[in-house]
Image (cartoon, rainbow, N blue to C red; front, side):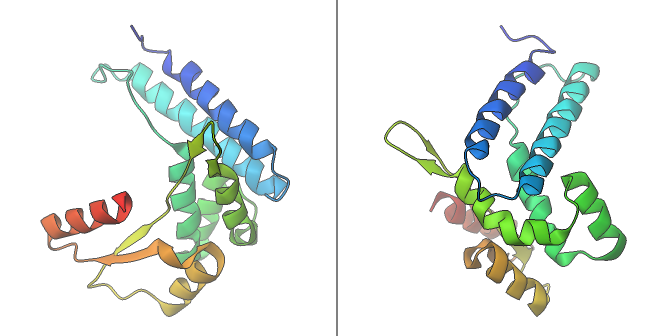
Amino acid sequence: MARKGDGLVRWTIVLGLICAVMSQQSTVSQKLYEGSQKFALNFFKKISEFVDSDPSVTTTNIIISPLSVWTLLALLTEGADGKTLRELLDVLNVDNQNDIKYNFKNLIDTINVNTSEVEISSLQLIFTDITQQRQQAFDDSIVQFYGQDLLRSLDFNSSPQARKSSYETING
């Protein structure tokens, strides 16, 4: 039976496996690799501290992907500037946005593995409200640097339809 405090050990093992896969790839910028690794360790530490210190948390069966959180925040840097951009880069442990722009696809390709023994795949999507106009520069940058299939518009005012559309998109 899992006990509180065991989570960090398990998460560290999973993180170690992901880092081992990533370290095999020389195409990912060292700064981006180190930034995502630091983010993951800090993320796991904060979640572990929260789970261990909050008496209302009664389970240790928590699955969280720091890479998913990191990639979402990395994508959001494209729509940020000024203080918000600096704060995002600080949290991501990346010195400048160009490290993300020019190495993001390589990082994701490194994570996605498909061999006869194992398959690991990730999916990055940005869902925006259909009633809110996105800036064309944001759309162009996302397509150019991150991939054209990342942007989806949904009607957030129609919760059942938005939920159905996002579920169908994710499950293919």
